[in-house]
Image (tube, rainbow, N blue to C red):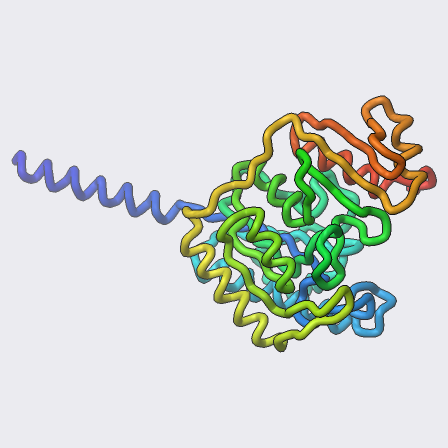
Length: 299
């Protein structure tokens, strides 16, 4: 009798373990930019007025699909994608899988990371580019190529990957993989550590690169996503000490002048402003404000 009870206990324990395993969820967040997409080198591929833009929307969508497919094959149960380039309306939603969620358009409080929260297990950056202070990289900039000359968090000059990793880190979610040109991949991995990197092109300058072909890029992205998710426990969140000091340097003079009228803003020099945020969420909202606000906003 005692032996039977022990057997029954082991059987019930095994059932519980199996149920827990089946119920285990893995959520992956994908932030997709466009400058780092395979073959993209100039504005002709990156905005609605460019003669190649419609074709490169297809390439961007296929890179995202490659990452989504690989994520599910590697064990993900949920995927959220953020369309994080330009107007946030680049991905062809009819060509995305039906079992994901998509964040579109701007403005939004967490910018390129809207929708992230503590329920996610890992973050993937697709189509990323290097920072505005990097002398290398295709279309290198941080947040705004037209307006900003530098963005610093706690005195560290940041790429968009750095800012977005800090937002993910606020929720204790690590970045596990990045794709883009060689300068972008090198910059993100130098900041975050040994995350998986998929280099789809090698920069020659701001508007030139040597690139692999789209199908090769999709295969590489699949490979790196699977490898990243396979070792997801090894990645650590990127966390900044709070409060967070944001320093933004404008290419022009007047934005810093007008923003300094706000009591929460300092003006260290003619082209720069400083804002102290209690955390990266507050900093993100302030950054979206300075990049988006116009007196004539309607409706």
